[in-house]
Image (cartoon, rainbow, N blue to C red; front, side, top):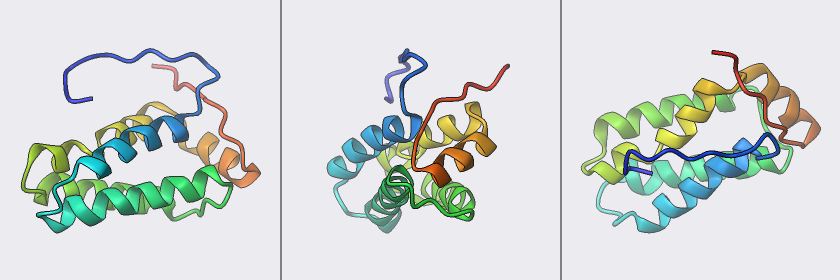
Length: 115
């Protein structure tokens, strides 16, 4: 995260949990000086936690995107600007409809998008 590295996972990796891992780290490292980083990261983590517990809502994807864009453009430091990066990458490279299906079931299988 933030080092230009690549992370490789297998097909059994839950991408919601994978995203939560990075958000947990970034939220803990936030200095709390700016609102986008302090509250945005925590809010994203709350949404992903709810999703991983099978309580996802249809509007969660739009909320995640909105918060992520605001953090990227308004956070004062690189940590706040890069915090939503892993979540947005997962949304970009994994099928949204598959996420929604798995959220309704309370399971999080990984569905790779064919590029």
